[in-house]
Amino acid sequence: GAVVSQHPSRVICKSGTSVKIECRSLDFQATTMFWYRQFPKKSLMLMATSNEGSKATYEQGVEKDKFLINHASLTLSTLTVTSAHPEDSSFYICSARQGTGGFQPQHFGDGTRLSIL
Amino acid sequence: AQSVTQLDSHVSVSEGTPVLLRCNYSSSYSPSLFWYVQHPNKGLQLLLKYTSAATLVKGINGFEAEFKKSETSFHLTKPSAHMSDAAEYFCVVSDNQGGATNKLIFGTGTLLAVQP
Image 1 (spheres, rainbow over the protein chains, first blue to last red):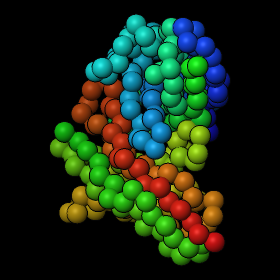
Image 2: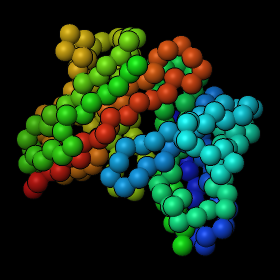
Image 3: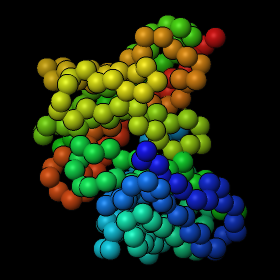
């Protein structure tokens, strides 16, 4: 149980393109979803937290107009990297959690490797 | 404020020998603690969690961890390493402040290498 599907797994595109990444909880309803960015050989950096039906909460330093997050249902959240540039190349990982308690674990997708040429 | 320190960035063991990955935490609240594993180019998989029940927590794939409040530690162990255990391991504490988000705070990770 607690499977999170992230799609696509890999994207290569030209500079200036917008890229959408989907995160789905397959067998549970995710009250909260999280988006992380991971640089090579580094830990995960939280970008934003999204609750179904409300606006995402962005971490300090993350541009909300650059990284658009939509959490339209209890099983789907999307991250759109708008007008992507080479510096946006990274590994993006989503996670989903049932409920809001900190004792409940987050379940992670397999990540999306984004490469901007 | 809460934080997690993973004392070793790299650990190398031989197959069949015990594994010890060290983690110390700092928390102003009763913490929830997790260990996650990440294989190359993959997301994170939950190994085990501590949420104020039994202090010795058993997880998947033969891993376990013991919560020691007096030492503020939550070390991950496995009696016998397998080649498939080679991966990056993250110790994580939850920001249990009762707010809506309860963010995860990640350690810097320990890369486990298993030698044949």
